[in-house]
Amino acid sequence: VNAKNKFGEPLLVMAAKEGYAEIVAELLAANVDVDAVDAHGNSALLIASAKLRTEIVRLLLAANANVNLATGATDFSFLKDVMDVGDAEAEAAIRSVDTIYVKGSTPLAVAVQSGSRDIVSALLAAHADVTVRVDGTTPLLKAAEDGNVGIVSALLAANASVNDTDKGGDTPL
Image 1 (tube, one colour):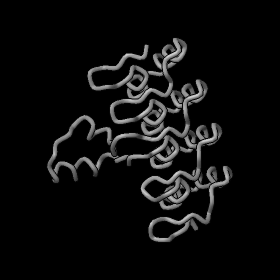
Image 2: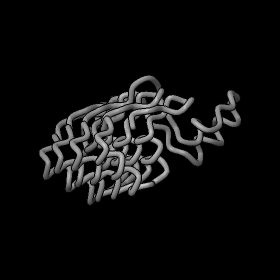
Image 3: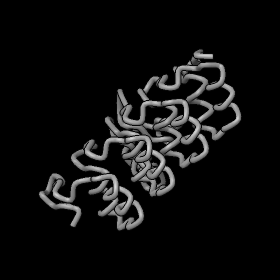
């Protein structure tokens, strides 16, 4: 159950990416490594959080997935992962329709970036670290920057600091 495909993706990561909750549940019941990562260092929980797979996030959290396991090797993008083109014009086109997740992103950071209050709440209930910085910003700073009041409220309830500053010295207030 812990096999990987030729691209280095574990079965659990593939199932999470594609949204196959029933397969995720079967793999978890078979004692798959819940924190296995793909060749880029991305766990099933991080990918499910990024792709807004709420049911899969809940299954992984119930199986004690590491809620603070960050991306490993490189920045990643779902489109870029599929289409590594290598020219600036194509890169700009990809960035215009896809979100780039920075190396060191956590499931909470990508859920905040994706704007999912349900997933953010589930991760916070599992004690996701609200202080982790990704590219110089905390989840609260990102949610405030995006104007996502619901996520800001959830992060504040989880004791995120309103005194943290971004690279420019700005606070969430």
